[in-house]
Structure formats: C-alpha cells, structure tokens
Length: 349
Image (cartoon, rainbow, N blue to C red; front, side, top):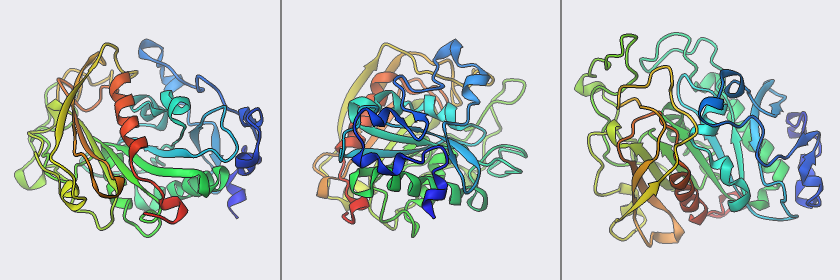
C-alpha cells in the first residue's frame, strides 16, 4: 500500500541498495545541489516560495519537498527532519526560514517539508482562511510522508528522526510527538518559537501587527501563549526563539531534570550573514519580526544528559518571530540535532 504513495519516486524504495550515481535521479526526481526552488532575500519571489514541492503524496494528492544528499551511499545512515511551517505560511517559506536543507550534504540529512491543507482553517486567533495544521485535514498527510521516507530510505538507515516546527507548526509537533504513531519513531523535537517544555512565556502582545502597523492587543493573562506541558514520552528537545517574543527564558528545564543533565552552559554564536526570508508584508513590529539581518544568539545547553539526549535553548538576540534563521545558528542547531541519541526507527530508544 505504501508504494502507492511513491508517485514520482517509484525507484526510491530501493535507495539503500542503489549506487551513488543512481541516487542523483530516482524515479524521475533529480537530486540537486543546490536544491530546487531555493532563493534568498529579494530573489524570494511569491512564485518561488509558492512552489509546493518535488514529490506527491498520492494518497492525498498533495505535494511536498524531499531533499537528501545527492551522493548518498548504500546503507548510509541519515537524520530525518520533518520541517513543519507555522499558521499562514507555506512549506517552501519554512524550508527557507529554517534552512536545514543547506546542510543536507554536510550532515547527511533527509528533509521533508510539507504544506498544510488550508481549506477553511480557522483558529488560534488567526482568523478565517488562514492555513493551519489541523488534525482532521493534515495528520494523515504527515503520517504518509513519514511512512514514505521510512520505506524509501530504509527504516534501518534512519539514524534519528526529528520534528521541527515553527510557531503553530511547533505546537503541532508538541501535539503529535507522543501520539501512538510517533512516540516510537521520533527522537527529537525542535520548537522554533512553538513552545518550550518548561517556562518561557510569550509576551502579552504577541502576534502580527494590524493593518495600521500597530501591535496587537495584549492577550488576557489566561489566554497567553506559554510553555508546552511535560511530555508523556521521552525525546531530545531544542527550543529556539527570538529575544523579543518571550518575557523570559527559564533557567531550568523539566526535560534536563528528567534526563539527569548537568547545569546549563551558555555560549554565543555570531552570524555575519542574514537569513533567507522575512515576513516582508508585516515586518516592523519587533515582536513579530523585522528585516532578516546578521546577529547574535545565546545557546544554552544542558550537558551530559542520560542516554545521549540533547536539551538546549537558543535565544536569537534582537530578533522576533519571523526573521529567517542565519547560517551559523542554523548549523549550530543542526549539529545539536545530529549529536543527539537516535535509534527509535530501529526499535531502540
């Protein structure tokens, strides 16, 4: 049944046994470096970012991006990232906001980036017609993608599997990570401004500015966005956020305590290049985001966690919700992901 999902990737299921040259064009889908439909800054036109992907989930008829190393060797282990956009966004914008795909060859990543259905989605104060991840419309598609990639690359070759979600995509990752389908598959969760396990309350006036450019009205205390609850399953966790989005970052982590990690260690990462994208239509309110630009980030890691887990927080200084991640901080996050314990795909963890 899963082979029906491989429309346009008919030969991909044999990838683990394919030669490196065959991996460059599988089932008519060419592996490209740099990957297709990529851009930066002013070259990120609506047409480029509106590209839905190079692979089709035949069961739903929906396209998504699948990026992987073009020189993949037989039996080589990879880290799988399911990269999930936020409310109102689209897959290819997320692919540029958190551009793990830029490091697919160096760190042997397989990155799947889908787009939410978007038909009639309403919720979270986003208003009508805003594309959001909804259980009844999107969960099956995300499961289809996961099964497709596991079958295509070989479950035994998935070193670790991460959910990475921005904003409502992060909330969606928190919602599904301990579900029956994912709890024995997902090794880590990267929340990109999508909720921390532990204290990190968002500011009261969190959200996009109005048409007049003014900040949104503050949320009542009982309706403010906050931390995700303690999870019912174990996974590595990285929380990345803009400094202007949160009131404060907790100095402790429930997951660090659960995994017996050492006290957190701080270091600084400096980027001299901007990220690829920004919310050009609504930039100007610092909480929501300004222009993409170079900057600094504080990286807090909790060392020596039990069983090789990774627990970390990343605060991007003088940034908000929508400035695309800069190259060095993207790579630092990818390195943390790759370093974490894996094995659930093989029945471990």
